[in-house]
Length: 307
Image 1 (tube, rainbow, N blue to C red):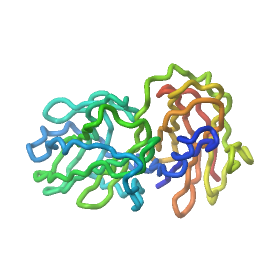
Image 2: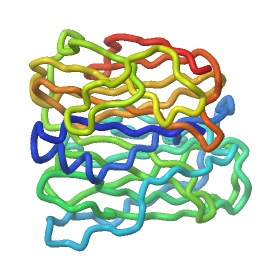
Image 3: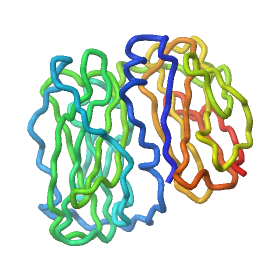
Image 4: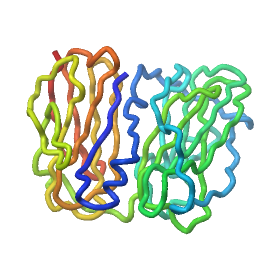
């Protein structure tokens, strides 16, 4: 599986530098062969996740998490999808308001896991993490495990509630576990307000072999990469982007599900580095493309080749 990470100009602001130091991006969590999702059976009582204990995110006085979090997992075939949503409805917990960018006032966060032909007595868990927020250290927020006694095909709704008046603006992730093994992780952000920025904030998009370590200017632009390349960079130049502009990238490797990731909110004029890293045996050869989004709207598409 491919994995990815991102970088942005660390000199643009203090908060951005903290993101660069602490965020772990798990774009490969979305990869793999997706199993077609049948109409799930109504969820039995055992899969109805009770609301976890109300959680307060503490400030920098807390001890930061030391273990590696949101690392690549191995998604079992019976997990066909995981989405983040603002709500869930019905006996089968259908997601409502699917998103990867929540507002601070969102009372409850939902991570909805779709199971297809899951084994009986499955232990399914969710662990929520704060990755970066100004004034807070990285920390585990909450963890819940339930038993899906009957297995089968259904949705499971993991929820997270907080006692604070608002979630801190920043980047987060939720890890999904199956029988105590990490299956996958989903990254998401909490953004302050909305930006009306469109594709006009993008001045340039450059595919490159590398970037400068301080400014992330592209080095060796190309649209043809080698299988043993250390990384493939899609470097985006934004110009006068307003506060809370949301940028994301979706990579399309050959014969693999897309890999996507949303940055924490950005603004100003700078280079942003979306980086795709290879599996141990190198990049699969073939035709690729990467889509760049501004505020969840497609701004541009670049194609390239791995030989």
